[in-house]
Length: 92
Length: 237
Image (tube, rainbow over all chains, first blue to last red; front, side, top):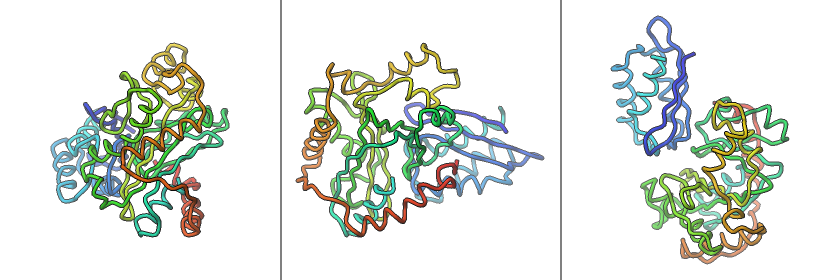
């Protein structure tokens, strides 16, 4: 399990725990003290990314695309921060 | 937590008026924001040693030690479409934190709102807040530090991976402050509660009428309590 922790400047703390196998994400958990509504969007994002290729550019597109299609309220972090923390965890 | 959610649901359904609630915890408990993981935030051995409980909120935000010795918890529940409440999270926090800023002013303490969800006095945190919109209502709840025991707070909350040392307590202690410390005197919980009432009366331009949970809310509490007490809920992350 790889982990990465990131404090968004002026925002909140994000953590990613990730496991990749054969170049694909097989486990992902995002945690932190940010605010998100509806809260189910975070779980949905995690599920969406399972099986994705563990490549930074693709992860970034997938995360941004996920939120672009939703009316998620996030306080203390932006979609790009979630992509960043996942990619950093993959590199850890 | 079940009571907060019950009032929120009842308020959203229009069955109860806007509500301001004050409560304390016995035994003391660590309350986790919805998106936090237990293993990252809580020293379970210390928690057990102190005899404290563990809870998870429906709202996001940080981990809080709701200490029976030095903390007041409050909730404000309004309709989601209340014209006073902005849809912008920071503005909405600002408005609903203002009651605490006003309450501290009543006590002679100059505090300020620090976005996103904190209230600080001279750079040190005295109150943390969380909001969630659910059931057509907005629930704003938070904690106000009246006094605190650094060994308890930093024993159960994992502020850092470093072992609990006196040096670490000193550093973490520097980041927070309490009403007792600022006033340099003992202050009773009823005095703080009265100030909070006055603060919210001013901040929301509201008339406060003392009340109790309705039978409908009591029924919801019973329903929700099962979920909040479940291991599945508390350890979901």
